[in-house]
Amino acid sequence: MSLNCGVIGLPNVGKSTLFNALTSTQNAQAANYPFCTIEPNKGIVDVPDSRLQQIAKISGSKTILPAKLEFVDIAGLVKGAHKGEGLGNQFLANIREVDAIIHVVRCFEDSNIIHVENSLNPVRDIEIINTELLIADLDSLEKRLVTLQKKVKGADKTALALITIIEKIIPYLQKGEPAINISFNEEEIPLVKQLFLLTYKPILYVCNIHENDINKENTYVKQVEHLANTQNAQCVTICAKIEQEISLLETTEEKQEFLQALNLKESGLDKIIKSAFQLLKLQTFFTAGPKETRAWTITIGMKAPQAAGTIHSDFERGFICAEIISYTDFITYNGESKAKEMGKMHQEGKNYVVQDGDIILFRFNV
Image 1 (cartoon, rainbow, N blue to C red):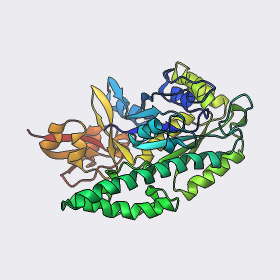
Image 2 (cartoon, rainbow, N blue to C red):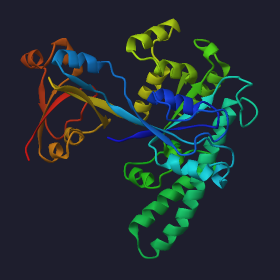
Image 3 (cartoon, one colour):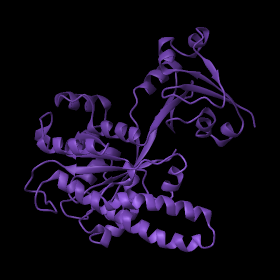
Image 4 (cartoon, helix red, strand yellow):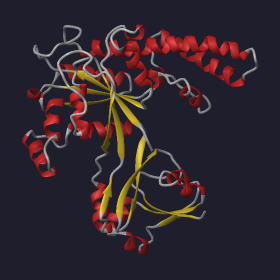
């Protein structure tokens, strides 16, 4: 399953530094001037999951293959982007292509790093970007409405349905409400997705703090957390500079020692990746054996045949059943044999909703 998160923010908030750390590369140029990133950089990252090692150890697997997420480093935005200011049009087009937004917010004072608004105010900075996204959506819908109204004259039912949805959304946008806050029924949601709205994408705010503020209370972070709560958005705090230093360490042991020295339980990057996974409403099931233990990414609520299809289309087409052991039972009974002996392996059909952590063997025939 190919899903991605766009890393956005005003210029010079630490987006590219964070992206470099996330992807453990230097692909995203990081410099102290606006629009350092022009073309979006892309990187695939592993989703941290300690369960993989436990399953692989019991299964005697030679290889471990974690779940993956793609991150896209998108050019910095300035006020007036919807009118083409800065790299506005390109920036907005790049955001339309991602599934979720990682919004990096500067929460540290540093006179040596330029701020495009010449002062530090995280809430204002967030509102600048959110307003640009909202105005861009409003402009897009108003133009789309004109086109669709012409099609309705030809008795186009899809056009009529889209017009109804657009006319429902526009008043909210005009009041400053993002589309993600609007309640849609099951029939409306597929139509909303066809509109590719910027404000319909889930958001994770990432507060970028100074290295001297690690494990300290930060007023700016509190402000962002409060705003995130009012928007039903998620929020994590990191120091992009420290995260990049950690990413350059070669071994897991070195990284753990570094984190312990800073009195941190996990890296900020792990928090971001896990939060992004939740933001996209994803979960993991596993396949395990002597050859490999692998994590497979599916959306929450997916049924067994569709989950099988993430491995291979033949698995879904010829689906017979799924033999399932929960992660807890697999660990408790030290693998498949004992779990099966204790009646902890259950056989499920086409209507089974896969649960996070399920270890599955699919039976199929094509």
